[in-house]
Length: 405
Ligand code: PLP
Image 1 (cartoon, rainbow, N blue to C red):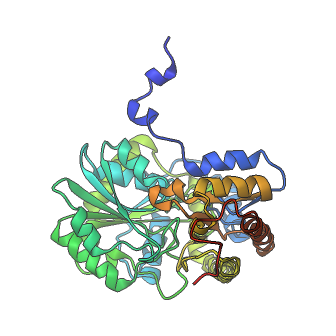
Image 2 (tube, rainbow, N blue to C red):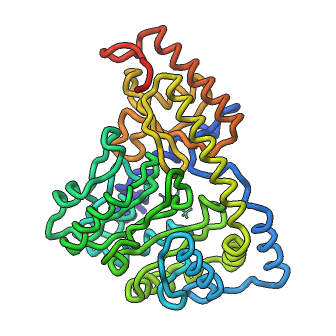
Image 3 (tube, protein in one colour):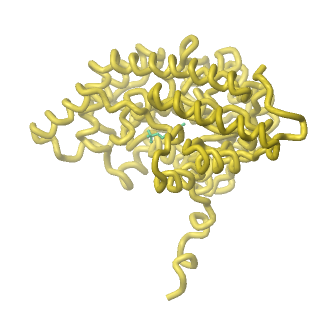
């Protein structure tokens, strides 16, 4: 037998492993590391949600559900989307429960993209979008965003990137890794191009509840956009339920039907116990969710101030739980900065390059960590920066670190 590499589908073989995981495997082997790395709430799932799962098991809920998921949960989701985001979807035909937003994303791309068709993706980008597009045979086309434009794509950028092969615009706001949000007026401009160029939108709104200034506006809410958008949402981030693996997609009946076809042959259904727990989250867990969001907002301010004091220019994130400061002025590349910070100070953050070439010169720090861990991590980081400045070895030609603007 030849090496397995020769049997593995070349499309799979050529995909690099996630830049986040690679880094964290290294950190996991070290002692005393404070991790601001993985995008995961530090909170345990609120007790009432865990309890609902325990009751479900006690009552013997151990079987498959319908492919689309428990009807009662779809009804809860339908009511919740309406109340929280002014989105109206029919529980019977327009909502599909999935194994995390991860599965929903994969289903949406596979249901839409034929080989050679193009998917427009803002970059820096969440690590899954490009690999999942490639696995469909589609072609990812990245739209570079920068700190100067608030890491927001523009209608003009979309317009310029469209070719006869373009099919999907993948929107992800609030954004991972930058924390950027897209205000309504800019969404409206983008929506106009989407309609004119006959694109469809996959809108990953997993961080919708973690919007700190004003309300989250889904592109699906704008005129003409409901029928050409599939909204992805989930429980991982807002309800601190990453390990439960539960998400959902909401869109027009025909499109949700197409996604359900793939789902029924590959996943069958999401776990029933997680679905029972999610029902409790939406029925009675909103208060706890809002408390967690308030905590993230408090930490967000702490993090922005800490970077200011350290002299690292940092775009003010409006959502999610990430800060994306520039480390360019240290003279170190993102990878080297993160490696040295980990080895010398035992603080793990993610190099911006894990999110595409546009992330060079940046690092991603999650503030879904306790205040004491954040405080200690920033103390260590400040020490590291001071040392860099003193030795001068790593200071950029433009000069030493200076105060953030
Ligand atoms: N989409 C984005 C933007 C994310 O950041 C993540 C997780 O980090 C996911 C999707 C995956 O979420 P889930 O746990 O629901 O699969």
